[in-house]
Amino acid sequence: MAKLKLANIDDVVNGEMIQSTINNKNYLIAKIDNTIYVTSDMCTHEDAELTMGCLDGTKVKCPLHGSFFDLTSGKALNEPAEDPIIIYKTEIKNNQIFIDD
Ligand code: FES
Image 1 (cartoon, rainbow, N blue to C red):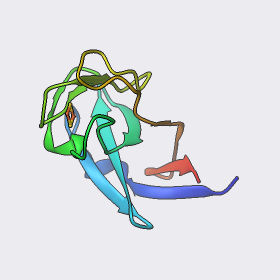
Image 2: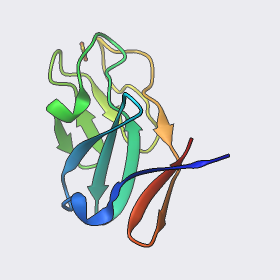
Image 3: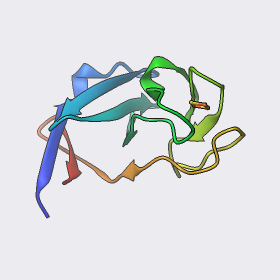
């Protein structure tokens, strides 16, 4: 499986998140307690980019209707969203953030 480079680790401030767009696909990259989390950047309820929302520890809140998603499991924690977001296994190499393509 090929590795996809998303960003430099220094592009993400600890406690914040950024969006990375690769091959027309948006990814959410968050750094919490210096751990990197990568997920899909689309709410599973309607079309809302989660990077437009806000972080609460390892949870991200959708900007549209307020569902929280757990960045560690992808699970939707409250309605109206029910389905999980996609979680990507990350690898840090030479200060670059990679996921499996
Ligand atoms: S679009 Fe995210 S909770 Fe509705």
